[in-house]
Image 1 (tube, helix red, strand yellow):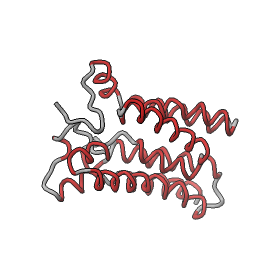
Image 2 (cartoon, one colour):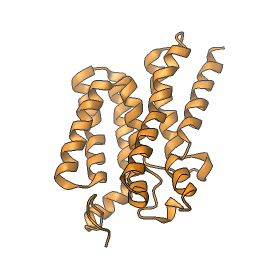
Image 3 (spheres, helix red, strand yellow):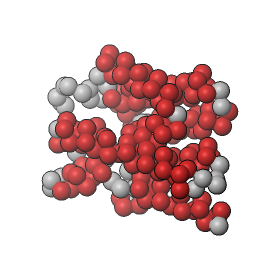
Image 4 (cartoon, one colour):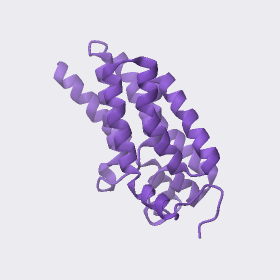
Length: 202
């Protein structure tokens, strides 16, 4: 039954992560979020399309998608290795968000979902990363730049706080994935065409 338990965790985490919150909310308002702004289905683009309250709500729901499986799986399957189980659930739920089967495997960037998952497994490193995100965003007003900086800081914070080789390797992979998903943002940042929060799109 051990193999079946692992499969259940992976499949359940993926399908929870695959719920395209931002797309569904905008679709209910008659908007295809994929045709608005950056075309991303995440909270930042939803905020541009529908305003801050809805954007923040989508952000919190996406974070909850990441938190629930990583927090709950060890309680349902205590016989499985806790660290490995949390990492597997985190990877599956973020993959579900980033490559949702409901939108032809095109999804968001996974920042909020990753943060929710990390809250359940690496709370202190996450708090450090959120501080980095807040500082960079306050200075630059770029959500993308703040997210990239936070992603780069994650393995460093994990190394300094936990000294756990497994978690360090995992967060390096998670960081690389998050930065890769921001490749179009990086191109716009370099070109000077990325949009700041609080300024109108030209």
